[in-house]
Image (cartoon, rainbow, N blue to C red):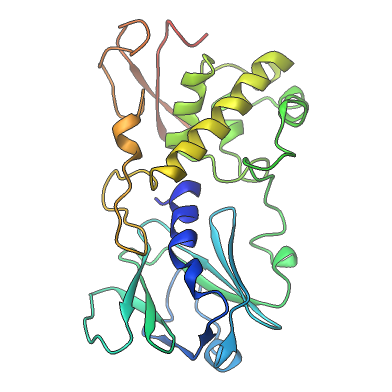
Length: 269
């Protein structure tokens, strides 16, 4: 599933469409995770795009009165083509048409979604989301405060989208390794110093992943066709029984919240 770095990479790949006119949207399949609003095409036709940004794992396209919210889901991706190209792939569900180019949303599993709203922050899919991990507000005091009142282990807490957005399974495992914290540690057992190390690790891992284009595990490609290469720098994720890069002990795999979690029993306490 595309996580925060992959979505951020995608946003940066299509930022060049800011200040362009969206001539129309062509929807080939309305039956995505949620059915696409039947009035959406009429509401956005010939509207200027003022800003393209990200909130959590949603791509936000700001028009005049309305904003579009696009979620890539489990397998969704965007690609940019020339407007006159007739090249079409199976599972191309939505086309954003501009003067010379078009952006195509392809989603094999159809867990992605497209929404239109007048107020992003009040949309039910956005309003209850947690803090952005790359923001200044995501600091040791914030993390320690939510840890102190939580009965979850730290891995589950980091992946709770109502508390912190976008720290997916890969990045949670990698960050906890850098912070030398065991993913099974009860969140309430962490002190301020340990929270600081986790914060620092999360920001470092996410920034590095964004810089390198996201994490390619199956078929993630940015909208401009570039492949994500962060997988070349993974320390623990997917490396079960491989030697730890710090101590050479075997990396262990466990399941937390139905998700594979990888860590070093020696280095992470």
